Image (cartoon, rainbow, N blue to C red):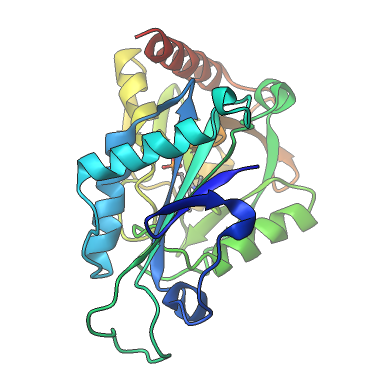
Length: 289
Ligand code: PDD
């Protein structure tokens, strides 16, 4: 049985419950993180913690714990869900959510309430070999989200609707376009390759500063792949030689079909393949440290 953390206590998932007056439930008044765990070690933990702190700052919730406490808590949750604990065999994905807390329903921030802290671990499945070898289909949609997408808010209704729309059109991801310019995927960041140069949209209020995105840029520079953070207009997206999307749970996912048309020659491109391999080596080396 999975063990979760809720407000100071570790408990079985089935026994964890929160009040219906929690502002996360009533208003979506909270933020979250998803942290991959490989061989028991949280991957890029400091980067996830930095983003968590930034999200909290943006929505004016005081960080309830120190960096050391967050790491201790995360490590304890990982251990309680590890193969040794008899529960989980695979790598893990830690979901961490903080809401403003429980109070009578009122839009105004309540005074002196304690934030709700919830953490759970699920097996990290990653992308199947089929996806890595052949890529996925994606569609484009007009980005219907708000203008503070740099906050990792638990308000994911627009993202959910975009992803569902992709699924209903036999695709796996929706690539979002705001005023003719690509922002990101419904639950991923986006990269293209054009004439050998890797391009991803610059950080802004219209996209999440992805931890995997930053790592891919770092790895590209190490591998001497030319990399640019610049605007991608719709026309450039459709003329791309390669497209891929990134996230902590799926890593690098090639997009080989866009709106029913082949991307490049329809196979996974050389830059995408190289970055995928480089990321795998980077992870393996961390496991050995
Ligand atoms: N989502 N953009 C959006 C809108 C996302 O939801 C995600 C990831 C990313 C990629 O960020 P990162 O590389 O830090 O995972 C970009 C997570 C995995 C989720 O909601 O489950």
